[in-house]
Image 1 (tube, rainbow, N blue to C red):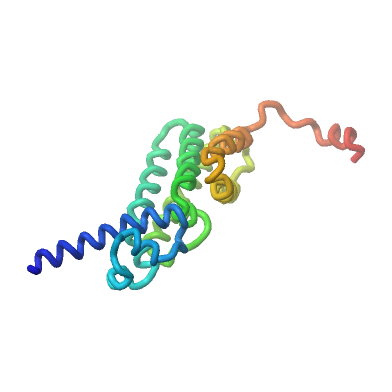
Image 2 (image 1 turned 45 degrees about the horizontal axis):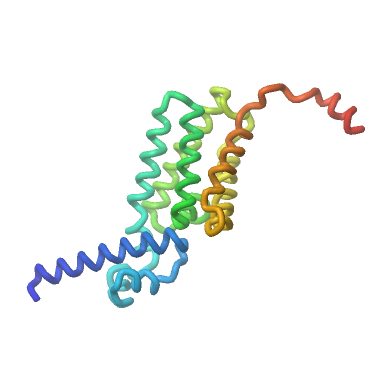
Length: 203
């Protein structure tokens, strides 16, 4: 076999491994067995470990581009002149991403990747999210007390909902998010005075 053919085979194996890893990680998360990835790619385990000696090498190769896309989407949201549509639309995008890609959900909310470029991209994505929250709050389109930590909790809750309903109601997250977004809006009427609430409850 010529050197050119060997290089072509190596590149084909690499592409098959990356495509298989993307699918397996999306379905099963970052801790998915590497043997399953090799099997799906139709290569031997030795080929996988020769190309990607450590799990984090494979994770880095697979997820740099998807996380760059998350950052680009966040920056596009910041360019939207409507603070509410920008914030709500980006939050929906992140929740939908969690619904279709378990590994990305983990990278965004639950764990560091041990890959510097991925962690840097995640930091940029969350800086953009914080800017969207701050702008929406300053515009008065979300409650004054909502901050970055609240939205991270929403994403963590959505990840749990997605996992529990994936088989029986895979679109349930969208209905739930609608209620969450309504709850983030400022109340349409002011809360009753504290003294009135105390009297009504005997406080």
